[in-house]
Image (tube, rainbow, N blue to C red; front, side, top):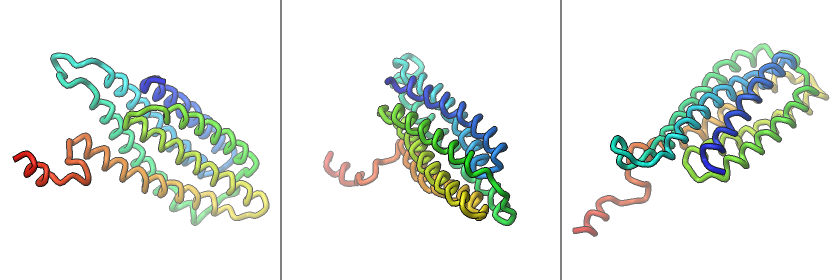
Length: 213
């Protein structure tokens, strides 16, 4: 599947499920699900921007951009990473206070929601994972991480089915957010260096110069 179509598929999957998550999170009373819905909504916006820039990147070179439009794909990757980091930080700030006042949640509803979420995220990851651009690589990483997050949510729902440890809900939100942040920041930095034409890692520029002399 071409990059632009793959990214658009990811956009619509993410946007649709973010809305479903938001509604279900309110019904089930889960701050983890609500936080993830906000996170996914922000991601959907980022993916939409990326999809638009990915489309532009496929244009042929012209008098305005003599080297072509390929860097627009990198720009999309940078924007996606920035929004992903921002969303994670906001989720962390939101759930720190909720640890002090945990609320009961609908564990059965969360369990079924998690199963559906894993299915959608795996599908999106498979679609995006076939692409070769830096932009698609970041999006694929997001969907895989989201899948792991929902596996943890399902495990939490199973535990809550037999206990009243409702503090697990906001705690899990923090764990997922910190995990995503730890992956998104290095990926953002590496993409930004490529975008700014930094010297590739492991390349000794002095050695290259001496070899050319």
